[in-house]
Amino acid sequence: MLKAPDSLPFIGLNMSIPPPSGDAPGEAVAPLAYIDAIAGADGIPICIPPYQDYRQLREIITFLNGFIFIGGADYRPEHYGGHPQPEEELMHPRRDHFDIALARFILEETDLPVLGICGGCQLLTIARGGALIQDIGTECTAADGDAPLPHSRQDREKQGKEAPLFRHPVRFTPHSLAARATGTPPGAMLATNSFHHQAIHPDRLGKYLIASAWSADGIIEAIEPAPGSPWAASGRFVLGLQWHPERMQDEAAHRQPFLDLVQAAANTRVSNG
Image 1 (spheres, one colour):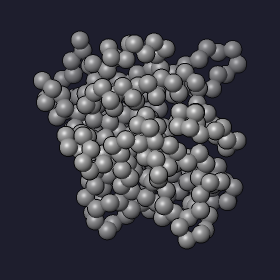
Image 2 (cartoon, helix red, strand yellow):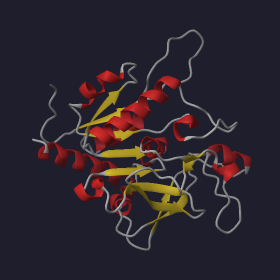
Image 3 (cartoon, rainbow, N blue to C red):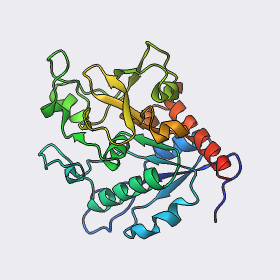
Image 4 (cartoon, rainbow, N blue to C red):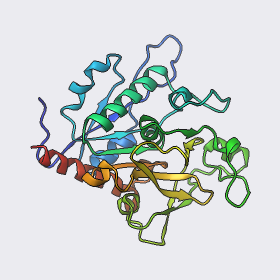
């Protein structure tokens, strides 16, 4: 079995399947921003391709110390009781089904520390029986009755607000895992990027999960173990962030989630012998 050096835990991450180009064979890819963020936090990134034989999952996971679920296109709504919507851009079915199986296995059958980013945050909810808002722009109204923030690039383009460095503020539950993992003190807010048109449904977050951060229009921006849940009782690191911190690594607040995940992975390895 592979063994990581004592100070460098193995951090797995799932992979995307881009749309095919002509007659070229399909391929699985991992964005470099995730790889660099893991390596920058002193973890060893291990890319896990979307296997077709789920029976191999246990063998794949045994040498990992932590896991990051990356972003991507939309998961199929049948996973959470939804119906197809014209605004959805569905991911490749092979990745879709593999990710669901992988997330359920890691969350239910292991104690690995987990970080879910954007679509990966939504995946944590789906895997635990939660549901999504399938399109923020058509389904949501802000608390003040106005239109919601333009969370996706497409919505910003429609409103003429697209900018490479678009950000919006996020508020946190004080002292929550999400607040600690971004170094956000009580009462403060954090500026984040935004590249999602879907969001976690506030009435169906999934088993053991609770919301701990929101944008100004009430969209959930972070999830973590609910107080009293087995994950909270054991101190398990499970964190979902709706933004893309891997694209903001020049700022300490957005590097910290990766540092905390890698540290939790190192601690988990030690506790497991």
